[in-house]
Length: 391
Image (cartoon, rainbow, N blue to C red; front, side):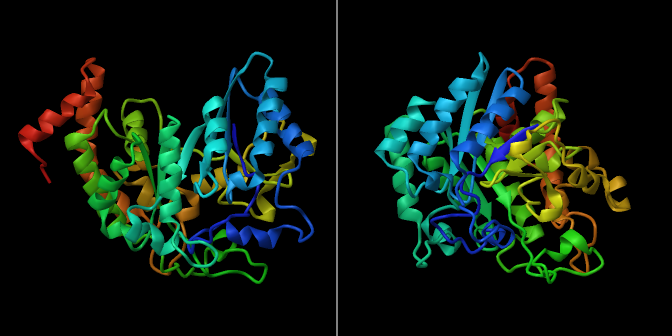
C-alpha cells in the first residue's frame, strides 16, 4: 500500500486549464481549511510508518504542496524522525516550482527530497495551459526553480502533461527536456470530460450508458501514440542508460518479468491511495469522490484497499481479453475507460497504445534478451544503428 499525501488538497498558485484537481473544491466543506493541520499530519505519519516495511516512501503532491509552507515540511521531518523507529524514510515532492527559493532548496537538499518539476515543454508549449491565476505564462518561474535546484545539486525529475497541442511536437519537447539537466522524464496522457451529473460527478464514474464529452485540451489517442513512438525511436537509438523515461522503464521491467512500475499498466488497482488535507483517504487521486472515500486518518489506516477501483480494473471488454498486448497493457487506467459514444469500456487511449506497442515490442524483446544473458542493455543502440527500424 502506498499513500500519496495532498497537504494542500486542490489549492494551487497556478490555474492550469486542464487541471482535474481544481474541481475537488466541490466536495469539501466551505469552512474547512485547505491545508492539513499538524494533528492530522502527525496521525498520518505515525500510522503510515507503522503500516509500512523497513523503507517508507512519502509522496507529497497537490494542488501545490509547497503552499503548505516550509515550517509544515520541517514538521514533517521532525515527526518522521520521531516515529521512524529504525525504518528508512524517503520523501518525494511534486511541485510546479513557483515558490522554490534558496531556503526551500537548502531544506530539500538537507533532507534528500526527490523533486518532481512539472513542465510541459519549451516556453511556447508550456505557457499554453500552465498559467497563473491572472492568465500569465509560468515558464520563466519554472525555469528559475530548475536553475536553483541545479545550483544546489538537488536531484529532480520532470513531469510533462501531454495535451492536444504539445502532442504534435514530440522530438522538440523531448530534446528540450534533456537540456534541463535531468535524467528522469515522465509523460502523462491527458483525458478530462465535461459531462457531469447534477451532483457534479463525472458521468463516466456513475453511468457508462451515457456518453461523455471529451475536453478539447485532452490528448488525441492516435497522436499520443505517434508522440510516444517518436520519442521511443530517439531514446532506443541514442539514450538507453542515459535518460530514464518512466513509461519505457516500466515496460522494460514488465518484459523482464519484474512487473510494471507505472500503476496505469499494472494488472490490478487498489494499493495506490491518497490522503486529502482534511484526513480523508480515497481509493485513488483520480477517484476523490464521496463514494470512493475509504476512511479518515483519525480512525487509522489498517489494511485499506481500493475495492471499487480494483473491480473497475478487472472489467475488461472482450476486445482487451483477445488483444495481443494484454499482458503489457492490462487494459490501462480504469479512469480512461469512458463512453464517448464510439469507444466504450476499453481505454480511450487504446489506439495510441497500440501504435507505441507495435513500435516498441521488438526492441523491448531484444533488450530483455540482452538482460537475460547478462549483456548491457545499452547494446541495443549499436544494433538499432546497424539494422535501423523495421516498421
